[in-house]
Image (cartoon, rainbow, N blue to C red; front, top):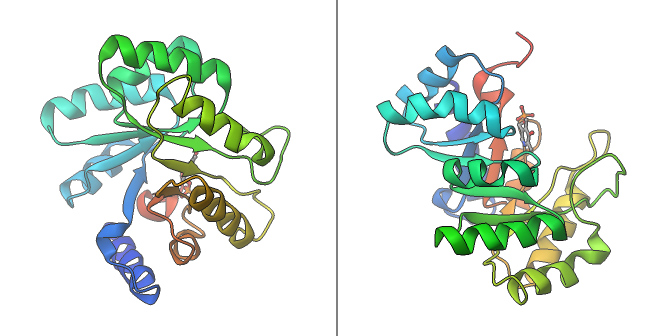
Length: 217
Ligand SMILES: *Cc1c(COP(=O)(O)O)cnc(C)c1O
C-alpha cells in the first residue's frame, strides 16, 4: 500500500533530522481522485485529507464523513470569500490565508461561529504573479494585523515553490519567516519534495499523486 510507503519515507526523513515521526502530519491531498482510491487510503488508516476546492470537498466528504467520523479536512487551495462559511463548516484547517479582505471576513465569521480552524498564511516566496500567497515583504505586517486587529490565531505558514525551481531555498526562507514571527507550523512539501521539506522543518506535508496515483489516470 502506498500509504505505508509514504509513512515510512516520512519517518525516515524525520529521523535523519533528529525529529520524531509524529512531528510531521501527512495531509493526503485527495482532490480529483476517484472515490475508490480515497476509500482505500481511508481503509489503510489515513484520517487527514486535503482538498483544494470547497465545492468538490463538500460533495465528496459530506457522505464519507457520515461513514467515518474522525476525518480531518484541510483546505490547501485558494479560498474565495463567498465560499467562506461553507469552508468553515467543512474544514479543520485552512492553508491559504493570504490577503486582508479574506482575513477580515474570516475574523467576522470566526467570531460568529465561536470556533476557528487551524490557520496557515500562504507565502508567495517565488513572487510569481499568477500564484496565490502574500508577498514575503508584506508578511510580517500581515501577521501583525491578523493577530492584532483581527484577533485570529495563526498556526503557521504555507508555501508552494515555483514548479521549475529547486524547492530547498523556498523551504529555508519559509522556515526563517516562521521562526522570526514565532510560528511553529510549516506546511511545505508535496509528492516530489516532501523529504526535502521535512529536512527543512515541515510540520505538514501535502502529498497527492505519490499516495493516490496520477490525477490524470
Ligand atoms: C495538488 C496539491 C498538492 C499535492 O500535489 P502532489 O504533487 O500530487 O503531491 C499539494 N498542495 C497543494 C496546494 C495542491 O494543490
